Image (tube, rainbow, N blue to C red; front, side):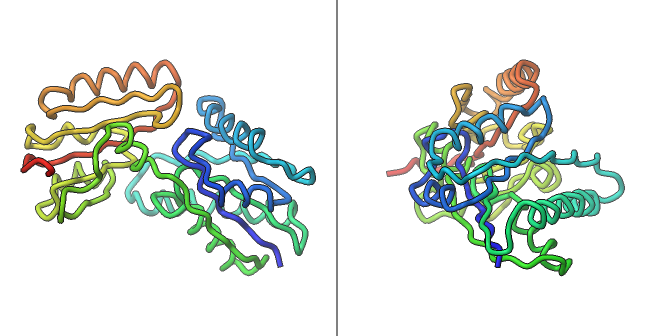
Length: 257
């Protein structure tokens, strides 16, 4: 039976690769490398850099594939994402059938960690449910953008004895800061939802291109730095053509001991 390795490759630094991830790369006969277009060629280049650096298996080969762009949300965000995932599932199915022998092994290289705000595992389950090809999935965790963000800001993710909420920019804008968590991590925010937070005394720890040579980090009270973050983000996106950013919001409270 075919084996699929879903490997977390970290948040952007090749040195985020774990020993387990490197070993998994070298188990694979085929390494699938996604291409999200010229605007995001850096993301594909990093995957190739990781393969160049760590793959020693002489039988290994790389297969690139184009990732379709997600349509702009219409009446339903969920249905838009569902349609997008269905398109990707068709691509995955073709790759699995055409590029892997019946007893072969292939790897998908996933930015960050496959279990956190990435849909590769859900999409592979769609492929399985189609019933045209069977396979075993193994998952190798990776360093997340959240870990990289906290490391770059030299902060702990949580306060002592307090919960942490991980959410999206869309949910933050719609629901605001939660009442049951003093620390909120926001991912997948294309519209700077931190601007909608009413309490401008919260502290924001923001980071873009985390783990890469282009990393940018800014922190401070929201009222003091939100305009700086907005301007910096706009300039960086214009310069590179894309941006990946994550941030942590923390309500005022007692400092850590």
